[in-house]
Length: 161
Image 1 (cartoon, rainbow, N blue to C red):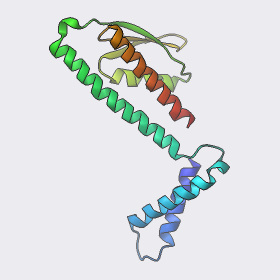
Image 2 (image 1 turned 90 degrees about the vertical axis):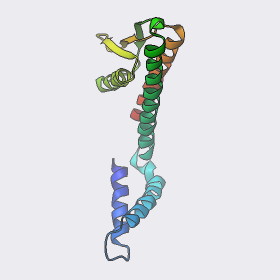
Image 3 (image 1 turned 90 degrees about the horizontal axis):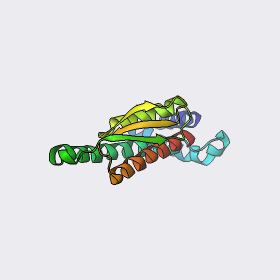
């Protein structure tokens, strides 16, 4: 947070010290870009990673969710419209390595918002998710578990970046 605030401060200074009679967004953006370079050069003194890594990790999580949302929507629609007799619903358990309640809640929400899967229950020790899946074929179970592992990996990346 301190890196971001320093970058904004540099951008405002760049804008104020420019030889212009009023505020221009283009000057502020140039100052922000100069600030990114300055903050990147001194970020090790803040005791953490460069702040844009966290924004990049959040962007990757959002893009992965959108891709999963689109592909699972198409797959679920295909099953419902063209193969209703091939649907074989069932329950899958997934052991998570996430520790905090908000992390497990985020993972649960990402699973619930993806069509074709719903989290039915979370174990008392918050380590196992019981997920209702639309199709219990081995291929679909592997796809579901890989997407959940991908979500979990991206959540950890957001936390530790």
